[in-house]
Image: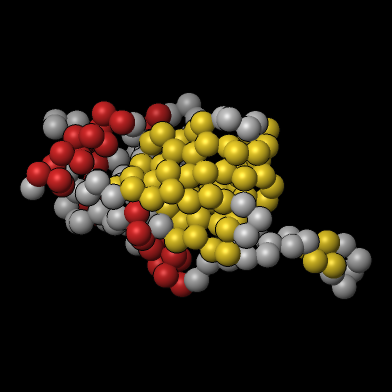
Length: 177
């Protein structure tokens, strides 16, 4: 495990049970000005504190990664599309579903697994670091997200995205420790 991507974290990673799903009616509601308002996210202090607190050791492993707040919007997700298939060491994400239905499969380094469907009732999901997440679009969808890291598409060092091989190495460590 010479690469920083596969380095063993110095703090215990969270589990799939630490992923938080919010049930809410996101709108639209009529406004006083005659328009419509949609709520994108509704998260409490616990999630905000987690997103602002980052393990300093993890930041040392990724010196080019910049903390901040970034939003993203994924459109045109067709039924049957599979995405994600990765985890992050530092990046934490809040995902909201303004349209469609998406099945998320979450896995942690301890062997825990959890399946969640974002739909009209379960609209928002908080994903902690070190939780592998894969999604399958069940009906045409859009995803809106907020992350605690900035991103440069041309600089892979800012992506903080790792796949199956690295995740398997970390799982082996935590399930055989």
